[in-house]
Structure formats: C-alpha cells, structure tokens
Image 1 (tube, rainbow, N blue to C red):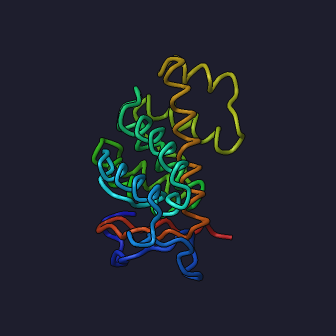
Image 2 (image 1 turned 90 degrees about the vertical axis):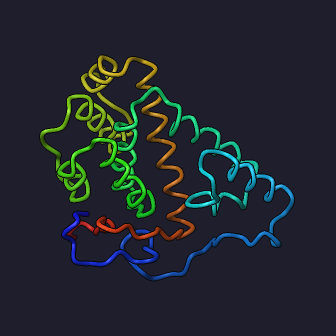
Length: 208
C-alpha cells in the first residue's frame, strides 16, 4: 500500500489473493454486443465514468440492469451529500471487507488525494483500527465497519452518525456501502482484474 513497497505494480491484478482462474466475463467486443448492450455502453461512456470498466464489464451482460445500477452509482459517487473524502474512505473500507482489488486500487489513491491520511489507509489495508482520524472519518468508518460486520448498527453508532451526517447522510452512507458491496461481488464473481497503481500495493490476505 505504501510507496516503499518493493513490488512493481502489475498490469493486471487478480481479485482476491490467488492468481488462479482466468477472467470469466471479459469486455465484449463491439461486434459481439446486442443493440441494447451497445446503447448501454454508449450511455456509460457519455456519462461521468467515460468508459466501460470495472463492474460494468460484467454488468453489460444485463444492459438494463447495468443502466439502472449505473444511475444509482452516479448519484452515490458524484452527487451524494457526503463529502468526497468520506465517500472515498467508505469505498476503501468496503473493498478491504470483500477483498476486491479493483476498488481498492482505484479508490485508495483517490482517498489519499481527497485528504484521508496514508496511515488510515495503511491501517485499513492491514485490518487495524486507524488512529488520529478526523472526527467525521471516525464516525463514518465505525458505522461502515459495524454495518459490514453486523448487518446493522447499534443505537450508539446510529446516534453518532445522525449527529454527524443527519438522517439523509445516514441513508446515503448505508446505500453507498450496499452499492459498493454489490459491485465488488460482481467483480469477484467475474474475476474482473484490476489495474496496478504505482505506489499502491494490492491488498494482501490476512494471516490464516
């Protein structure tokens, strides 16, 4: 994860922690797409994402679903009331939970750029509790971690989240977590590879 990691970034990083198994649902060539798939791909390219990549490579097999998921994702990623720094932090925590290299390698650099501390990202990558976080980051990370681990949250965690984000913020935070779990699962099943990032190591497996 750190810039001192001796491993060079791989051109393609497999999901999870094993190199076994080829990509199950690679990007369809244009000539193999149905008219609906081409329309869905063109709509994605015309939007803020500018390309068919990541989970949308597999989701293109269901173009109507891809279009609807894409619209939800556009709001949660680009228009949500949650600050960009908090959104990126949440995406990193989700990626760590579900062992998704694509989202980790995409959002860890963006989280750092948005103001999340390197030490916070290192702790998440290593499965440790980060220290010295901003107050709102601590609230958001606690809520996200509890939701991922317990499928809900206790009254104390809920009250702290509402006090920090408001009810709309809590709904959007919960939806952001669910959205990214979903797209990570799609990529994990499809074995969608991630692109290596200079200075950012892929996630490593925790000791058995």
